[in-house]
Image (tube, rainbow, N blue to C red):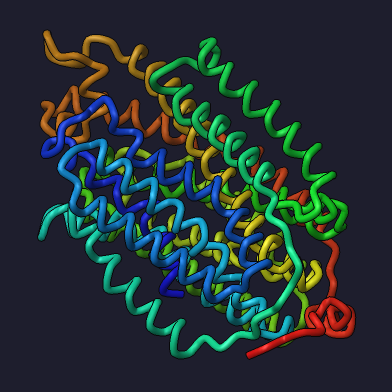
Length: 493
């Protein structure tokens, strides 16, 4: 849980500190890379960590991921330029991809299928809480001891995780003949990099139809096609294609991608509403998301306990997609004068829906794959969730920019003469310093654009609901006899 907390926290903790970081280090034109490079290396490396752990053992691979993450945190904390900070974030992401996937794979190794629901519920709380708490802690460190402590805080947690895994994590070491699929690893990294760079740049530095952007997208798709062809031939594929013939795995992956879109879209744009429309500081907007954390706690732990008692799971993804859709519909009704208690209620419903989906899918996939594929199956869930998050961030960002420009055009003449509308619209502090009339016009345009963003999530959640219906139910705990054949004959402690 300590390892997963590190990785999940760093997905969201840096965002609120970026203005302060740029003012100290400069490099405004490279600002987006601080976030993009972490997401890029995390997503690209996730399936690699899972496969390596299947071959070399879970504990040493997990410890290597911790060391990599701590090394990246140290580089970022000591950065004296934007380039060094970006390099540190890239190394952090490499380690983060292993922390996310391997923590859950270890649970799959040491906990029987019937008991996993309860433990995955705890991990769901850790992941969801870290994602929600990131902006709060980022704002607190930035306003307090300084933004570098966003990275320094990872060192004691990482060291503690290393000590605990060294002393307490006793796992069988499996001896297997193996080969490493180096070409498959290179292809998946290249494909994911091209596609994520397209989503990161197309709505900002370049246009969606810009030749450079389209070149990245086409290149990513073509490399993905070559990757699929190669994986069908490789002796030890990074992502075995046989998994997609599993009647549980394929709809579960589709559900994971779509929920990643909705989850990251909601978590990124709710703090923006708090700051721009409600006038909160970064720290206050983080505190305002605490109801989401309460919702995640409630449903994640509750569903995990019920899964352990009943051995059944099918209802929870269906509930999660349905409740998250209701929360998005409620969030789309927010206005400039909505009282906070109402906002908090909607945010709680959002977290409550997510809690039913965060780690339930991991248990479902682990229950359906062979023991020898535990690592790659688990890492695939994290991989596709990250891909969904990347696409969601890009799609919702494009919707927000387009709709905000539209609503600002419908309210001409509201800003004082000589004020650059585009610059003010993207500067929270500048909006808050406007006179009453122009500020009301600006916040109205923002809330209307954010309403459209939340509505955009509904079609995706409808697809997630259908995917949840298609997931067949295999009662937990019934795989024991089936997986006995998968157990290695040579095992040493």
